[in-house]
Image 1 (cartoon, rainbow over the protein chains, first blue to last red):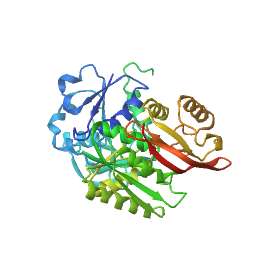
Image 2: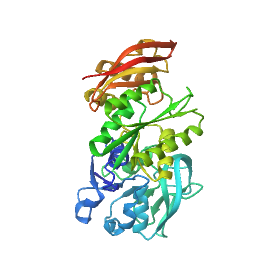
Image 3: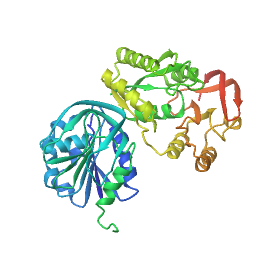
Image 4: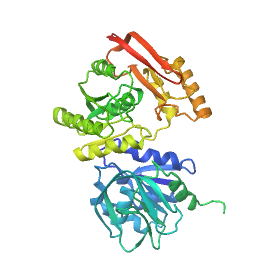
Length: 187
Length: 226
């Protein structure tokens, strides 16, 4: 069972439809999902889920940047996590990184710098962000555009982040994350 | 949140308007009238019907004519949205974007510059489900343009109903068309919808078609009681 965490501010009631439902549509082809808003998620609410996807959010929405204490469960949950855009930025902040201004809106080319389970080579992605993550040394960088880091993985944990939106283009990135950590996957 | 809807008068922008109005306050419509028939952003048949649609909805309409040159039309759109911010104090723009990252990214850029929300309630929705929602919600929508094989003049002016959806889905499976016209295969005009206080009656129309390209042009229409 996948937990999809809605990272949108309560100020924007439409973020769920734009940034969460498309992830659910992809994920439910492979596995059952539950959606919870980030304000509802804590250490105790994670039981029963074997992997977690943090959604993206609207350009104007940076509400989780100042609420990293709410996400301290990311450090000890022991579950595979994929953060998308705001989800990646929040993961990075929780683990000691920082965000800096970097605007990319539209199709953008990124290049994989390390072999990983999500993607390979150079490919085009849909970017929608005003900030990029400068990750801490806990993470290795998996891909970059000409302007910023676009994908990371924690060096010890199965915690991934992508700045681009794979639910818009490159849905196989979400599918590969789910498949890689399916409890009963066939080998 | 006070919202302005980027409105072409077709099914997607009208459905987006309805979805948005369920949660927040829609205060104006914005229509770009492109003089360029090849415009990727704004060209649509019967754009002039948006005046009647706005009246039917009881909403003010910001109508801006653009020559439709690829980047200049975006400047025109930005000016229209800026006018909506100034005149109606909108906090965000609603679009009917479903799949097009070309359109979505450009509108996101404009909203980002102006500091307003960009709301896309139909984004990535299943296209057959969208058509079904349009019918289930009681929209009266006609096909006002066809632009792809094997569509032809026989489709023009037809109302979207369950039978027509099945035909469009069958064509999408056989020929790879987007069933709701996301690739520009079809354009639509909404003549009635739940938020319309009056409906649009077409008094005079013409079909202009050649091969797999054509339009159903509304020449004269009026509002009538529902």
